[in-house]
Image (cartoon, rainbow, N blue to C red; front, side, top):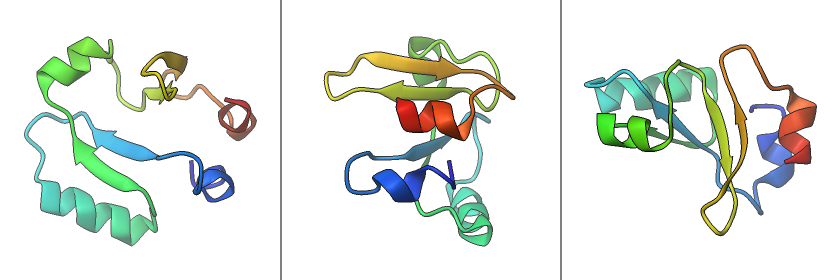
Length: 86
């Protein structure tokens, strides 16, 4: 995401969501800052994970302006080029 986000910052909202239920949000923000992540960081609850069908970490999901999932990739899947094409 670090390679793709700057090219689309004016068009797309990038949001990283931690799936470790019960994580400390302040620690997530500190980690994001340490890593130089410019996007919003948040937490998922179990209801959200279920609604989006997230079963593994590092699930990448793109949602269009109508709320439709247009891209999904799991852990170790999805290249910068794929993200850019979405």
